[in-house]
Length: 423
Image 1: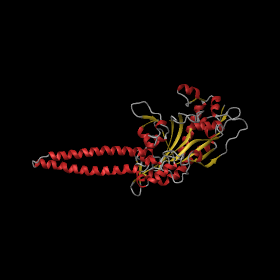
Image 2: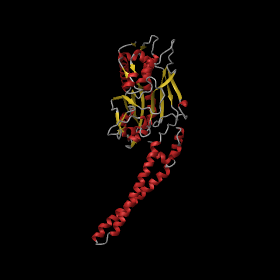
Image 3: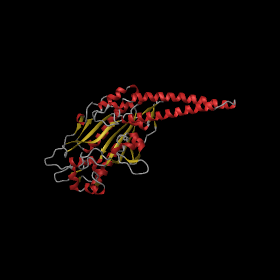
Image 4: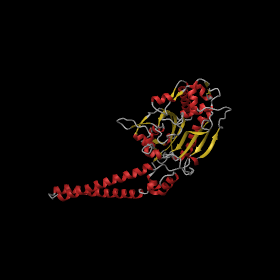
């Protein structure tokens, strides 16, 4: 949620932000009138309630003096009816204002490049060079079948398409990668967390998934409004919901491994082969809470922590800064990390690292107490994948494959996996 103060004092900034994001700026046109009417109604009701209180006091006086109270009772009732009608109008106006606010994306950081879509994202840096082969390399969906380590056909029988059964060395590799990532992240100062994979509506609203992305979520058919998590970001952010954090405790940095569940609405036909776009997938996540003055710096650090995983694995990648039209709804600034996949002859996203500013903190009511002033301020939240495990497996299989069909295991994973090669 963006700051209501910005809406009232700098609506043009909000409109400019919507234009940069390729959104219709007219969605805020009704706000000034609604906000003004809301203010008038609040003032009117305050005055009416004062009049009703004064009139109510007279009832006792009239009764003690033996006067007729019919007229004063009618006056109190009339004021009550007007207050009730105003309350109903006020509730309707506040619902309209809320509906507008829930449509509004985060205010972009000033240095985010302006662009329409992913074609105008900017490459920041590369690490390593694309893997070359002196033979025709296989795609990971063929490698997993030939090595019999991940079974997509059985998963389709069990559930449906875009699910996977990891078996034998495939399951072992996924576990090795998970432990390697968590160990690396905890060495970098992140506290490991294990959270529920089911959350309530309040958690998804606080982190920004609801109401905008409802169709991308798996909602449970249950008496309570429960959802499967789309990412560990949701429960991790909500661990601090409605909390006041002492400034000296910041930054707070968490890492967690979870399964993630996404319906991928609107993604039909995109990256549906293999492990790139699944309805259920494993991921290790990074989430941080900090003060506004250092959140930009922390985004660079968090992105570097995610990059370190790829560097240690020896996988070629590049970092992309998302332009305004491609930056996510709740993000003020985002870097995507893309790993090289020979089957695509291209880089594909494996991590997205974002500074959410105070957007989530306002929804989740997460504040910190300033050490010097004692005042309460909203924290800034950040998140990033570190990394998507299925995509990491795809990248390892494709980049470390041998002509005989075997796959070498990256050196850093050998202590976790226990073998140097899959064949």
